[in-house]
Amino acid sequence: MSTSSLAAGYILQDGYPLVEDYVHLRTASGLTPKTAQQAAVAIRGSWYGCYVTEETAPTKAVAMGRIIGDGGWYFLIADMATLPEHQRRGLGDAILKKLLARIKSDACPGTAYITLGADLPGRRLYEKNGFKDTMPKEMGMSIVMRDAGQ
Image (cartoon, rainbow, N blue to C red; front, side, top):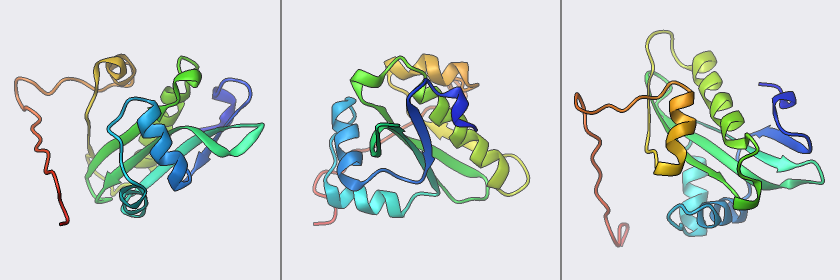
C-alpha cells in the first residue's frame, strides 16, 4: 500500500508504535486500557503491524493496527485504534487494507481465516472491507480473566 492513499500529512509505517504510544492509542480511542508491560509483550508476539504518524512528528503514532497469527491460516486483526482528533480521515481504512495485503502476500498459500472483534463504530469500516457477521453459523465467545499471571 502506498502512502498516497492516506490523507495529506500522514505517513503509513510498517512495525509498531512505541510502547507509550500503543498504551495511549488504546486508551484515547476507547479500547480497554493496558499496561506498558502488556503492550511490550503484545507487540513482541504479533505477526505483523503498522501505524500512522504525522509528517511533522514521524515518531508519534496517531493510529495503529496489528495482526496476531500463526502465519499459516489463522489471523486475528487486533488493536485497530485512531486518536479521536485524527478519526474520519481514512487512517483506519488504510491500516486495515495494509494488514489484509500483508496476509495476502505473506501467509502460506491456501485459504486464510481472518477474524476480529468489531465494536459498533468500527463495523462500517470492517464491512466495507469484506468482513461479515459470522452469526448464526458461528458465534464469537470470550472470557475476561482478571489477575492473570499472578
